[in-house]
View 1 (tube, each protein chain N blue to C red):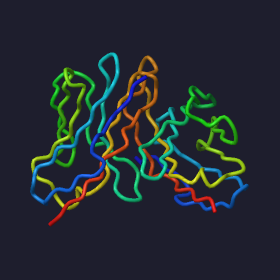
View 2 (cartoon, one colour):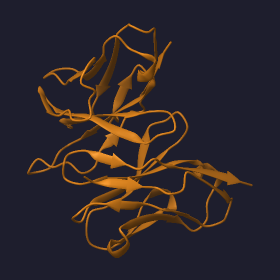
View 3 (spheres, chains in turn blue, green):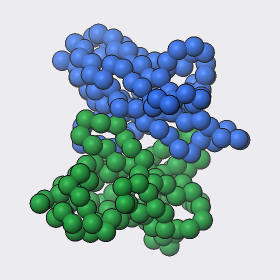
View 4 (cartoon, rainbow over the protein chains, first blue to last red):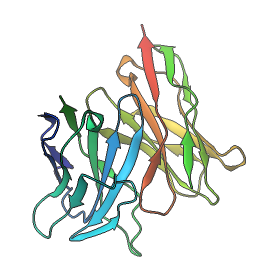
Length: 117
Length: 112
């Protein structure tokens, strides 16, 4: 059973370009979470999605950031018009959910390290 | 809102010595607590978790942690560290709102 997969592992974008980060959850997992890790900091929650639904996006910046988890295919975190402050490691996690809709264990991917030049 | 504090930013330990990494949380009810390890340039690996029951939990790689409600703590311990334990360690709390809240991490350096 493959783990959570993220690609690309490293992404370099110039200011103003778009960044698209992809996450394939573990097989059988229907819950996806995105976290951002700024240099020398812990991980900060961004968004929680289930298939075709955004459940909680309270950690997402209001502008330029969006996320989706379509019925088919990976989850995508999209950053438009990137700025230097977007440089960070972006981690995806997935969980199977449990009865009642509460997820406890989250399994993390290797991350995408975004550098904005 | 829940929060996690890891008071030690960086700890250096000799190989073979014992280790304790501190974690304090803030949450009104009993939280679900986790320790993750992150090697340089890598993702996070779950070391252990506490949901309920026995307050001393065993994890992978010889780590254990003890939940102390009275102190709002969930400290990570290992009796004898190995050079391969050098990494960043994160404590996290899941408070039922579908997201993990992480501490800022403790960087562990092992000296021979």
